Amino acid sequence: MIRVIKHALPITLMKECLVESQKQFLGKELRTNCGWGQELVQESSPVFIYDLPDESLKESIVRVIGSVKEVPEFTDTNVMFHYWTRGSYIPWHTDEGYKAGITIYLNDTWGRDDGGLFLYRENDEIKGLIPEFNMMVVQVGGTDHTVTPIIRVGAIRASIQIFLK
Image 1 (tube, rainbow, N blue to C red):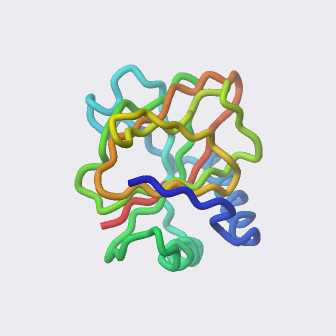
Image 2 (cartoon, rainbow, N blue to C red; image 1 turned 90 degrees about the horizontal axis):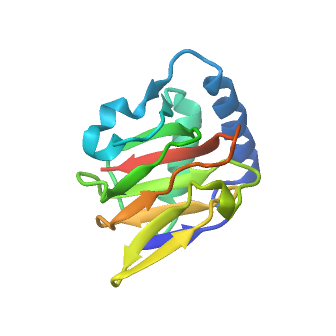
Image 3 (cartoon, helix red, strand yellow; image 1 turned 120 degrees about the vertical axis):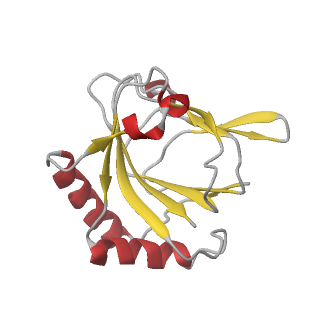
């Protein structure tokens, strides 16, 4: 099941996330998608990942998503920033092992010709979403989904990624 919530985070929290995301992208504590396993990496360019240690910011994000009715109850979270580079993607998968996966988009502007679209299967049909600033996509129950390759030159597609257990 896929649910979309626009204007997901309060604007003050979004601004705080943007500042922290930009600061961490320039930092040295990034890891990459290499740890995802070959079935998820395939031929992708790097996706840089920053695990959010800032308890205050992480707690604020988790508090907001926990109040959204489309988000299932959870006992544990993993919150991170994802930075998708040109040529990066993730093939079809189901986020196995998690109750839900959540993406909140950070880019001010992103077009359908930029790549990085969220595609998912619903009733034997493929549907798609174009990333929008502060749009939250909630994926519950192992819905098969993918992110198409980023093709926009010089752009980084940034998001908050949350996995719930």
